[in-house]
Length: 357
Image 1 (cartoon, rainbow, N blue to C red):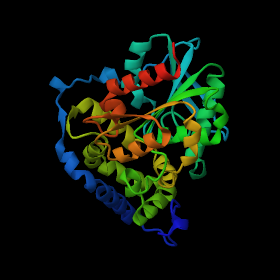
Image 2 (cartoon, helix red, strand yellow):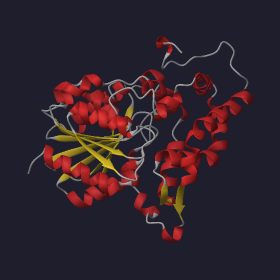
Image 3 (cartoon, rainbow, N blue to C red):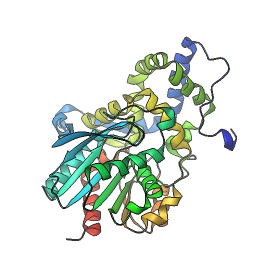
Image 4 (spheres, one colour):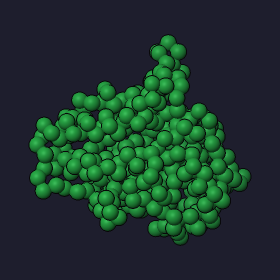
């Protein structure tokens, strides 16, 4: 694949038949997952009797909900925790195929710590969760950054803001810094980047798996024959779940309630979201954000078993930002669930640095 063709949807002159597409979708999914088969075997789940996470722990409770319209007309669903009168705000941006609910354990830990002193704002990214769908042309990291700016200006017109981004959410924060540098410093006073990178994800983890010419056909199928691919996805979901879980968590015993929660969330994301954002993730490069983000307090947090955005990417990002690097042991890419108390502590420490008492 040459440089000019990277990140684009290649539509063959003659689309494969439905039966072939269903089989192809299944085959690609299985092929993409076999690279972490060993991790799947190493990952154990705890039974209901000793599971430390109860279903009620994963219910996201918000004080307020609202809709903010993006600059290009996509409705963004936003949940808030804490009073509007709080002296400062922390805004959380979730990862690819996730939603606000992925922050639930971090949200619970931070509310217990902060009480009414901090307002927390949780938007669902465009094309995700309860926010509106978007076209492939609207599925860009740059527009995710634009959405953050819109939410800040609409819901948090005054006071200091600290941003927290997980995976794609961290990329969106970088895009905000590139597109709206005037907000960094005067309004945004801190940023915590979790399991993310500034550029060059094409050779590792998720993006490396996505750079496959066979997947171009699958993307085209999602776009033009979504019902066919949807049936194929439903068929392989029971098979895919343990592999998706293994790709997101470190080896070892994990809460079955928690891993089922996150894998169901990821595998239930709209097909259009998968197809639309894949090129954006493949071609992501926001190095222009780094000088802007160096104006403010930052931290970079990563699990030592992160397959999606490996530790070396976080080390490079921390060095580029001259930032604190926090490595969470026995933790994978879903650090915001797997190691929520440690993530919450890292966020709280950054907020204390960014907004001294």
